[in-house]
Amino acid sequence: MNGWKQLGLSSRIFTILFLLLFTTFGMGLTSIWYADQFNKMLNRVVVEDMAALQASRELETELANQKGFVTYYFLDGDLKWLNELAVHRRAFANWLNRARQIDKKPAQSVLLNQIQLKYEKYITDKDQVIEMYKNGDRKTGEAIHWKVRENFFELNGLCVQYMQANEINIKRVQEISQLRSKRISTVTVVFMSLSIILLILLSFIVISQVLAPIRRLSKKAAVSDVAAGSGDEVRALSKQVYGLMEDRDRTISELRQSQERLLNSEKMALCGKLATEVAHSIRNPMTSINMRLFSLKRSLDLTDFQQEDFEVVSEEMRRLDNIVRNYLEFSKPHKLKKQRMGIAQVIDMTIDLLRHRLELNAVAVIRKPSDSLPAIDADPELLKEVFVNLMINACEAMGNGGEIVISEEEAMAENIGRAVLVKVKDNGPGMSEELRNRVLEPFETTKPEGTGLGLSIAVRIVEEHGGTLELFSTEGQGTTFSLTFPVCEEV
Image (spheres, rainbow, N blue to C red):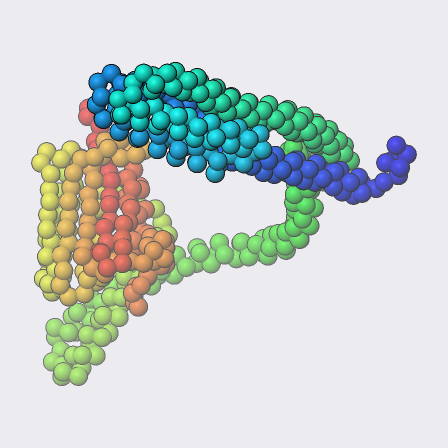
C-alpha cells in the first residue's frame, strides 16, 4: 500500500490501464481457446459421432428388413422375395463399410469387426437354407433356418450394442462441453469482476485527482459567474485560459477602436449632414441646367458633331441627377400617402410608363392577373417607383429581347397573414449565389454607371408598406422578385 501511495498520478493510471489491458487480453485468449475447442468438438460430433450413430441405426434397420424374406420364399416360392433380400443385404454392406470409414475408435472398431464376422456367417447359413429350399429339401432347410434365426438375434444385439456405444460417445461429448462451458463462465466472471474493480479504481483516481482539480481551476478561471459544466473539463479549462488571453487582446483592441470611433463619430455625423445639404444644393442648379440645355437644343442649329456633344452632356446630367435623387431618397424616410387601391392599377400605370423602353429593348410583358384581388393600403407613386425599378433592371439584365411575366394572386404570408402576392419574373441570365446574397444591399451594383441604391430603396418602400420583397435567382434560369403586401382590413 505504501508503494502505491509513492507512485505518481501518471504511474497509477498507466498501472491500472496495463492491468485492464491484461484482463482484456486474458478474456480474449480464453474466448479464442474455448471457441477453438468448441469448434473441434462440434466438428467431431457432426462429422464423426452423429454420422456413426446414423450408420448404426441404418445397420439395425437394414438387418431387420432382411428378416422374413426367406420364410416368404419358403411359403410361396416367389423369387421376388430373394431379390428384395439381395437389395437389403447390399444396403447393410454399404452402411457397414461407411461405419468402418467414419468410426476409428478402438472399441467401436472391435464391435464392427464382430458384426462383420457374424454377418458373414449369418448370410452364409441363410444362403445354405435358401439353396435347400430351391432343391426341395424343405425339412432340412427348415431345421437349419431356426438356427439361422438365433444368429440373427445375436447379430442384431451387436448392432444395438454399437448404436448404444455411439449414443454414449455423444452424451460424453455433451458432458465435456457443459463442464468446459462452466469453467469458461467462471473464468469470464473472474476477469469481468477484476475489470470492474479496476475501472472503478481508475474512475476514482481520474475524478478525484484529475477532473476535480481541473474543474476547480476552470471555475476560478471562468470569466462569468456560471459554473463550469461537467463535460470535458480539460477542454473547458483550455478554452477558459485561451479565452482570457483573447479577452485581454480583444479588450486592448476594442479600447483603441473605441478611442478612434469617439474621435471620428462626430466628424462622420457632420459629414453626413453636410453631404445631404450638398446634395440638395447640387440638385437645384442641375435642374436649371437641364432646362437650359433642353431650351438651347430646340433653339440652336447644331452640326452633327455638336449634336453628339450635346447628347453626351445631357445624358451625363441625367445620370448625375439620378445619383443625387437616389442618395436623397435613401438618406431620408419617405412620407407615405396611403390610399385604398388595387395593385393591378399600379402595375398597369408602370407598364404604360415604360412602354417605349420595353419596345426599344424588344421585351414582352405577360400579365397573369387574378380575379377579385383584394385591395391594399399603399402609396401608388412609391409602388410605381418599385415596379419601375424592377422592370428596368429586368430589361437591362436581358439585354435585347426577352419577356417579363407579372403574376398577381392572394396568398397567406408568414408574419403578414392574408396578403397580395406579386411576382416579377424575367428570363434573363440570372445571378450567382454570391451576387444574389448582396445585390439587395445599398451601394451594390453590377452596372458600370449604377449607384447600387435602386433595389435597396425598393426593399425599404415595400417594408414601409408592411410587406416583404424576396429575390429568387439561379444562373442561366432567370430572376424572380416576390413582393407581398398586407390586405386592407375590412371595416
